[in-house]
Image (cartoon, rainbow, N blue to C red; front, side, top):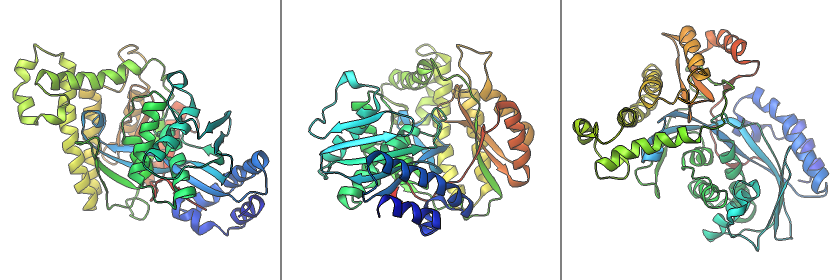
Length: 428
């Protein structure tokens, strides 16, 4: 459809079934209509109204269990959410990719120049270039297109706005030029490749995989090159758990936390190297635990605590999968609480030791416990040190929880999320 025709189709309800397949609820579909109309209109104003267009989507993600395990080849559970990046796209004949994101400058990539350059590190244009290069390296077709994008995945929230953008681009190339044949796993790997090689950020694969594959996924990174991925047979949207999934943005200061994140990985790896291996996954828990007396003289105490967290968190991921697949939500909640306490006490990624008096995540966790104790579950979300808290809140406590949290951290700080059933996709 052309621009004006597609706006009419979206606003009139002709696309409701397609929107509901992605956004799950009728109320969510209604909320998306003005957003989609704005994006389509913006494309028309920028690139011309006489263009055949379609709309792509890629979700943010939430980490459910497996906090700080992927970088040592561990196990995780993650899920795609209803907050997403969308793109209105159309082919061009220029051999150029143009991507204009709302509120940002135009990214322009000449497909004759797909080599990474260090001076472009940190530039969003490099992400576009890297995704195009990654898909082309897999042997698929990459041609020129124009796109206008919008995202409601909050940056710095632990919901992976950058991964959503990368997966959005990969999905666009897959559907526009390759009939949707680039697999979700390959799109995730391309997204990671783009961020590592072209953008200059040494990220793992978790965020991209959760966004690309969609729904709830269990990922085992024992082999980083070929991670084992499987969807978990538990549909939050259609299973009447009686709980809402909330993410609390505590508004903490994210600046100068790189060293804190890096220390978690390096300290876990210091334990592995002291035992003759590269990562903890290469060592059995029994061998590690029996070696603690000798480790005391080789690594710092916090490294040993973080290693204990790693091993127990891997076990919790397996238990969490079992509880979900058996429909045991009470067992699932117990695991989430255990994970949260382990992150707090052993992994110690709830506040930065550089500024121990600023403990917004600790405060959010304490408030969550006061309201939800004996009923719900709560834990630090994502990398930690600043940022967000995850909570599973009983419906009858949702208004109280939301109003109390927002009274402390500000209006709009508590997001009630839906786990969506699909990852990167063509919506319309």
